[in-house]
Image (cartoon, rainbow, N blue to C red; front, side, top):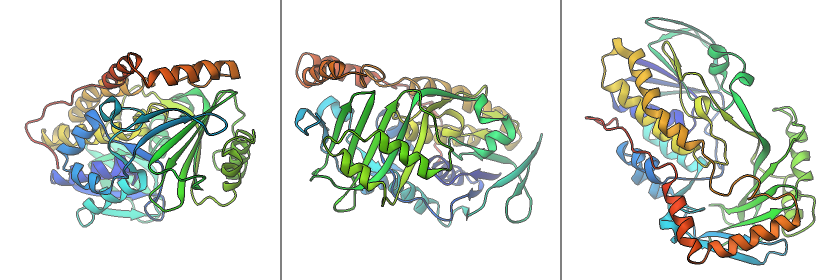
Length: 399
């Protein structure tokens, strides 16, 4: 079967790997001129780790992982309130025992598909004309082509979703806040530890290790009714982020200054994508394009890998004439994973990001207690039960 995947990120590359392993003729079209390097740390745990293992991805991912020691919660003076090591919660806590930079995971997947699939950088889909037997695709560059299946793995702001299902606003639900990730000089030696500070006004700042010596990753999560800048206005986005880092405490001045020279910058509203269905005819949504759960859930990479695994296997167990039936089965079997992935972590939301300093003091007391028994045991149980949905069983595994 001739398959077009739009989007060369984790979801698209994982699907390409699994589909090519099933004998399909796969082409990827990616708007960016090359692979996107860097990015934040993402983790594999539970079902997503099992899906990666079944697709033959786990060992190369382990080889490229960035070792972590855990999470330190600090106050505005940088004093440690609590320390949650990776070994706590069975390796399934705030920092997992298998974490990898997004860009490194993308590179692992790209290296696995190189020579097995065609990858076209610097191009995208301009128009789609689906019928019962395939999809005629017009590209921004190059000649039109016909494919048996189009997989839209082009992210939260998916062009394919807009072309087939309509305006983004019809399917995106706001969670009431913004998040920004950016690259910064290491403000203090992290030694494998991530640092978290909670600030008044429902703000959370996280500094995480990077693979590059002397570098780190900063994340600002800020809840509230913000006047959002245009999606392409980076200067206005950075101004909003600076306003969220303007307290002058801890490492905030250094993080704010780093925005002037950062080599990577990501900004978006905190949203989830809720679709009435994941496929129409022979066009199917994969990853954030179909079921973005927001960075708050920590499930984006997990669902991308699980979705790629389920999609490839449902297509692989049926003849080509039954593609539409396979896509319906993909949606049906993925639904419980999506539902579980939309659940936000315990204590997230208003409790985790209080408005007032009094609320922060209460939160600090909870954080200290959560690092000790008996509360530690209860938190560990809550963490381990999240998203524990078994993978579908298949006679043959797509690799």
